[in-house]
Structures are given as C-alpha cells and as structure tokens.
Image 1 (cartoon, one colour):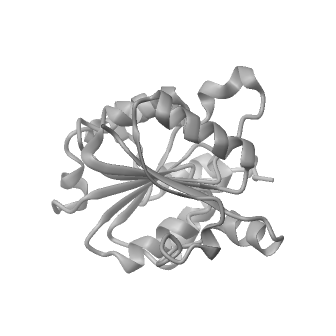
Image 2 (cartoon, rainbow, N blue to C red):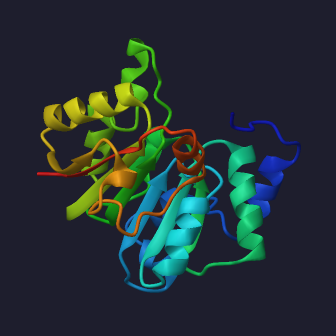
Image 3 (cartoon, rainbow, N blue to C red):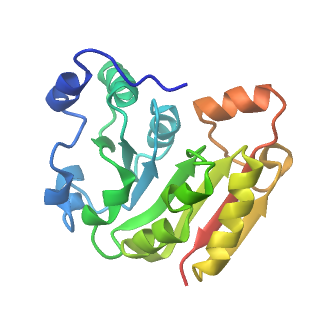
Length: 213
C-alpha cells in the first residue's frame, strides 16, 4: 500500500532541487534543463524511484524524468536523490492526465509504465495508463521511433492493454507473459520495488513493448 500522508511532504518537495516545480515551462525546451541534447526517457507512476535511479546510473547519456502524483511516495525518491544525486534525473509531482501539457511533439524517446494502478472497475478504464485515451496522449509527444514499455503482474490489466494497443492503432513490438523466464526480453531488465516483491511471491511478470504507427 502506498503511503499518502506524511506531514510536510509537499513543503519538502517544493524545496527540492531535484523536483521541477513548473514543468509546463520546459515544454519544448527540456534540453535547457539538462544542458545537453541527449534523448529523454520518462517513467509515469515512478513510485519511490528505484527503477529510474538504477537506469540513470547505468545510462549517463540519457536524460530521465520520473512522474509521480503521490507526494509522500515522491518524497522517498527525493530523499534517495539527496544521498546519491544524479545529473541526468529529475522528478515531477503531477497527475498523469496532464502529461501531454509538459512535453512537445516528439520530445520523448521512451515511456516506462511499471506496475500501474489497474483501476479494476470498468467505468474507470480510461484512467488506466495503457488505455487508448492515454495512448493518444503519448502519441502527441512520443518520437516516431519511440516506444512504450509496460510491466505488470496483473493478468486482467495486461490483457486489457494488449487490446487497447490494437484499438489505438499502435504496433506491438514484443510481448511476454513471463518476463523473468524470457531470455531475450529479460536481458538487462531493471526491477522495480513491486517487481521484486511480486516475483518473490511467485507471480509471473508480464511485459510488452509498443510503438506508435
């Protein structure tokens, strides 16, 4: 269960040099923040930041942005960054529904979606980060050769995602229902906190990679 109420969390986030307070002001000019022209990869719903921090350490020639809406969860990531700062990683506290307002056309090379909220009720389907509504948002700023990478242990959400990718007119580049036993797709896999927990419980991890057409 995610922590959602830590006294003073929002104040600490606002004071952090690792969290962008006005992300819309960087739309179309993110290279100015990173001071380079390296490709941008983002994770939506990045939780406590383990996945992105490990990626950023391994890939100094890529710029990473983590997006999280829960202040008390994001705070944990900022505290980790304070202990081990990374020049190619920044965070944003925001709701993913506004994601297309902060990135310009073809400004992002890759989108990571890891163990996203399944929103199990049918009436909430459009809130799922792999819904056709969100895929349309991603199309507005994902590069032509960019990809969306999605991991989950939720069977229903994964099946839904496969159908939504087809309905949205996207291309499915790769898919596995058991990532950790897939030699090709598991190569170089960076695990998230949830992935470590669920796989230790014996849950197979599903993954897909999709691209816009």
